[in-house]
Structure formats: C-alpha cells, structure tokens
Image 1: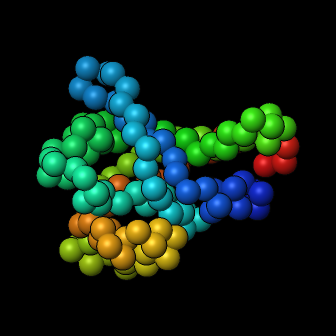
Image 2: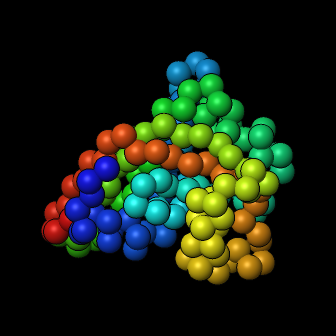
Image 3: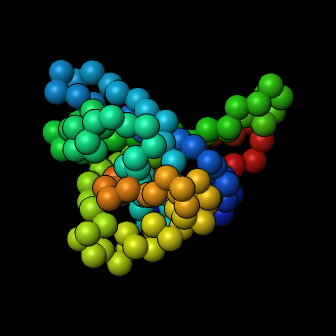
Length: 144
C-alpha cells in the first residue's frame, strides 16, 4: 500500500487509535487501542490492563472472528482547528498469538515495548490483532 511520508509520520507519531468492529447484529463496536505500524500491517495487542474477561471473550475479538472487516481511526484534535487531522484505515483483521512464533509479530511486540513503556509493567499479552489495510484515507486542515 502506497502511503505518503507525511501520513506515515502522522501514524508513527500517534499514541492511540479507535478500532471499529461489527457484531453479529451488524451493530458497530468502537474501542480505543494502542498500536504499531510496520509499513504493511497494524498491530494491536490484546493486553491484560484491567480486563476481567479472557481475551477470547472480548467483544472486539468475537466480532473479528465473525466479520474481519474493521476500521481504525487515528486522529488529532486541537482547539486550534488548523491542526485537525485524521487517518482512517479500512482493512481485514486477523487474530494471532505470540506463541505461534510469527517473526513479524515478534518484531511488532518489540516496537510496542519501545513505543509504550507501560508494557514493562503490564505485559503486552498473548493475543494480537493484525490489520491488513485495504484503504487508507486521510484529511488534514494543515499538511498530512
């Protein structure tokens, strides 16, 4: 997928995104997530934080297993509206585990540990959502 350097830099700089999935009744489900991007895929860990349910019981996981079409929104809001911007990624998600020995996933986990120092205490978790982008749209009131 061809992404401009400005959009790639905006994605790399972002700390949080919103993941949209669709449930069995075609109702949207939206959650904030952390992520890394390797220029080909987005990696969203399913970490332990404060979740009481097992990862496979989370609504986003069940939704992706039922319907892998997802959207990921990365945005920048500012009271100075000249700085407003967003990138929306539409793609297909899959779920994998770090026990599957995927080299690409191991590299993503290293990037997650560097980007989010909190993982030193929380742990990245065993499951990971991987999004293969099919369409990337961006808008900016300035320069992305």
